[in-house]
Amino acid sequence: MIRVLIVCLGNICRSPMAENVLRHLVAEAGLSAQISVDSAGTANYHVGELAHKRTRGLLADHAIPYSGTARQLTKDDLASFDYVLAMDADNLTDVQRLRSAHTRAKIGLFLDDAYQASLVDVRYVPDPYYTDRYEETFELVMKGSRAFLERLRRDHQL
Image (tube, rainbow, N blue to C red; front, top):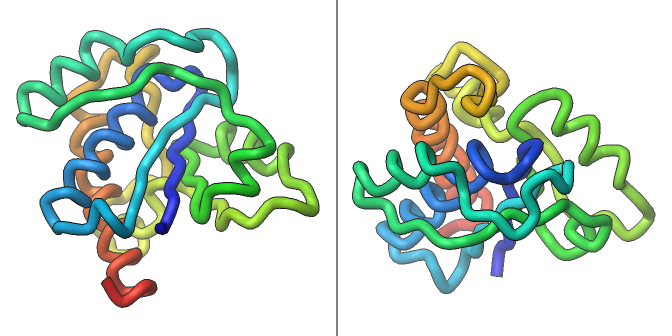
């Protein structure tokens, strides 16, 4: 099982959106038995809460099932997940601070694959909690999810 963790600040907007989008794409590809997807936040602001209502609304508008509640990233996550993908530079720095000798995860930015494939011209997914640009975030998440899934398929011969 390939385990993927997507990380943002509070785990109520970007990362749960990406978690559910990627999980949906994985299911559509018939790869749910090979790939699992989760999300977490670097801060504990919203632990136990559902994703933001705009995030849930966009997922519903696109017929993408939603599940999950906010949780905080732990050192154990870096030892148990294969990939940890951060939404922006601050999130990436916070993830890297948790690195230890037990870290096995490949750590990177969520949009790396989409950026390298010239599908997007930005490296970071902006936080819609502060910008209120949920539709823009959703489009970036879709492109990033598709590109990352292609990478998994290629690298793991799926």
